[in-house]
Image (cartoon, rainbow, N blue to C red; front, side, top):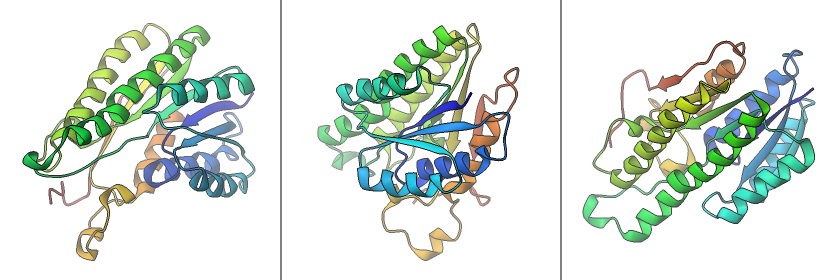
Length: 243
């Protein structure tokens, strides 16, 4: 039976790389073939990604959803359950950021980041966890950030939202350990993704790439059910990039 893997924010960056990594390895892992359910706010990105994944022979479904919208969260879950009746893995990758000095941050910036990174992630994770609890199995990944443990001057609200995600991870893990469900917190440092905008070539040279995060995520998923990788911390070799 194929494992059903839901990936949010799959259209770009780390989410896209994780989807491609699952697709490339599903065929080789005969014991754990999977079906991908890819979600993003941008349907155009999803279709091009789905086509690339299907070339490996994997089954793929797409569902446009903005997890800041509670109706979209519920629709994504219903879409998946109506087709497959289960969810074996959720990759909470959807996230947004606006990076400014504290004095320039607005309440709109606050609502924009917290509605996705905190509220939307909570809503989706709570409902999917309930499904997995009934199944007696599952794996939830949170793609947080090193900003979940360490604040930067340009990321006040972003760090708040990521600290909130880490709090959710740690609380959910208390429940999950009693239910046979695995919880993995993935904390990347600077990876070259669209969230960074225009990046000077000198900085690009020292940043990680999305596939650097994708590979250990899939490695963690492929661990036997008796084993959970609770945290993955990945940084550029030269350390954190703060500007």
